[in-house]
Length: 307
Image (cartoon, rainbow, N blue to C red):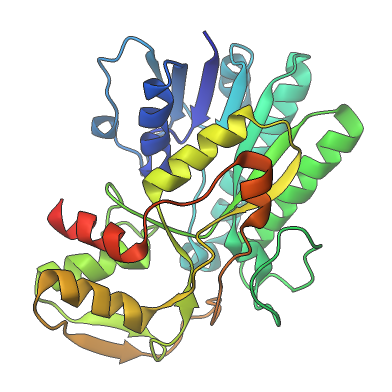
C-alpha cells in the first residue's frame, strides 16, 4: 500500500486532502504541529491513518518520517500575506526553511520519493496581463514576504530537480475556500470571514472598492488536484484554480442570494501587499494532471451557508 506523508495534514486543505487520500485506500501519515491544524478535522479511527505531532523545523523528526514515505505532500505553512508582513522572520522560517528541510530529507533518503508542494498565486504579484500563466517565467516583483518565500521555494525545487534528480510538482493554489476554514484565524480566507459576518448580521469589511477580483476554488476540488499531482509524471509548477475571475462585490451578491437578506458592508483602504486582480490559466493542469474544477463559486457558497 502506498504511504503518503502529508505535512500540515490537520489543517484546512490538508485535512480535506487526507480524507480524499483515505478514500483511495492509501496509507496516510499526518505530520502537523497543530498551531492552526485540528485533530478533530481527522478521522483518527481510520486504520490507514497515522498521526505524528511534529514541526517541519525539526529536521531530524521530519527526516525520519520522510524516510518511511513513498510520496510527500508538503502543505505545512504560514499562508498569510498580512502575517508575513507583520512577522517576516517567522514566516520565512516556516515557509522557506521548512520547505528546504523537506527537499533535503528527500535527498538524504536516497529513495525516489515523489514530492508535491503548496505554492501560491501570490508568486505572480501584480501582473500586467491576465490570466496568470504557469507556462511562462515569473516577471513581476514579489509584493510580500509570503510571495517571495513561495517564489524561492519554486526555485529551490527546480534546483534540487536539476542537481539531485528530485521530481516535484508545485501547485499554485489560488483563493481556496470551503468547510473547516476558521474565520477567526489570521490565515483564513475572505469567504469564510464574509460568511461569518453575514450569519452574525455584522458588517462585512471590504478593503478597497470591492471591484478587485480573485479566482476562488473549492477546497474539495483542491484535494482532488493534490491526489492527481501525487500520481503525475511531471516536474514543474501548475495553477490550481477555476480560471474564472469573481469580484468581491459578486461574492457578496452570491452570499445574499443564498442567505436571502442584504449584507451590511463597510469599506476600508486597500491593504499593503494585496493585488487588485488575479485569475489563472488552467489548461496546463488539465493537460498534465487531468484536473478541472467541478464546484462553481455560487454552489460552493451555498454549501458553506447550509453546512
